[in-house]
Image 1 (cartoon, chains in turn purple, cyan):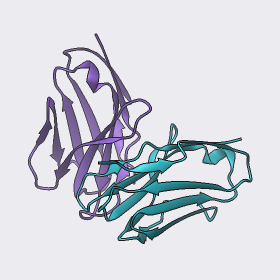
Image 2 (image 1 turned 180 degrees about the horizontal axis):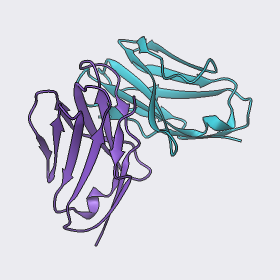
Image 3 (image 1 turned 180 degrees about the vertical axis):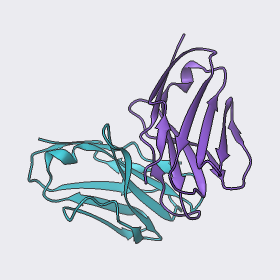
Image 4 (image 1 turned 120 degrees about the horizontal axis):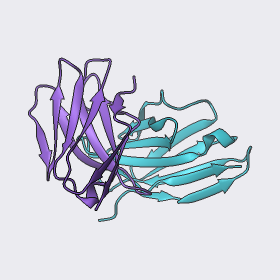
Length: 111
Length: 112
């Protein structure tokens, strides 16, 4: 079951904040976040595990609400380099199973 | 260190032709994944291998697609015969069993 990401696209100016959500209809074991810049391969940002704590990567952090089967990615004081498409990937049962990715959220940051 | 290597980077072929995509994972990695990316469907997992053994091929769209991993350093994804709807970017990724998957640069396939 493919997770649903929202919004589909976000347009920001440098310094502004954004939140990207990832929701699943099934109970999740973990949520993985990747960023893909235009014409490049996806790059791993972080993983959030069931029962784990909120994670951070530079000014990008994420949370995982197990009860709601939802994860949120927080981009604070956005920089031009944050532009790209953000994907969440979910594991349902346990670590080491295949990831199912959402369709992505495209973030555009301008100066 | 070299990352995941994929070849060719671009492939243009005609409907009905056989297409073979190649992947060399990062040395020492024991899991390998093949993904297909399109605007409509996003990033879809086609198949993944663990220690050269196919674990889950439920994402392979139909019998026209096949994948092999004859050894730890090489994998192929074959489409025979190819169709225009197979046009997409195909990514190979590898991991060391942990959460982080390292993606290759992708192969952009166009089937005319």
